[in-house]
Length: 246
Image (cartoon, rainbow, N blue to C red):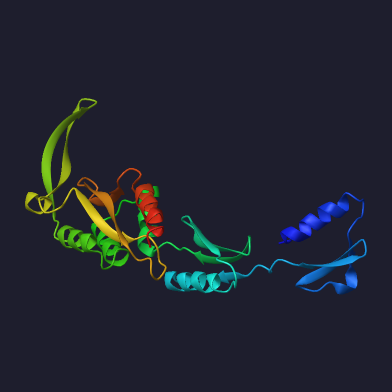
């Protein structure tokens, strides 16, 4: 950053059509000297920018605090920007924004699975459905309760005789209709709330309610978790907003 008095001098000399000339042999990483008329002026170069990568929220905060103390004789401004991809801290010291501290944000495996369920029509048999709840949502209370409820389900078959006439010949067909025993069906909730973390980064493991419908197809004996409309966007928006409160 060029000092104010140096700028004023350059402006005043410019009126006299004296062009500043850099003296190449004086240039270093931190400064350079210009010849203005018969006067030599030393220009200090801005501090080279420094980039840091933080792995955790704790280290991110420590780096921001450490960088603000690095500037002597000035009170630097620390500005933090964030979105669903990263946290970025910029230190404004000495009148120019140089040092940048970045912390990449990664989604948790739980939230990635929730996104998958919202994007795909995943219907599963009972065995695979229970395995998904146990493996992909391990330790999540809502998933544990749902898993215990559905694993007790038993399907029954009701036989219904139907008569049909084809080209003068009568045939009897038996239609099998699958149904879930009512005593088990009453134990299955229509919706389930999964308390899952959005981020995988240490220090950002807050959990959020992710709501899903529980759908059962008795005819095909299939199960499905269906996230509420725009549930992924709602939860992600709240998680991003909470970054500013961390």
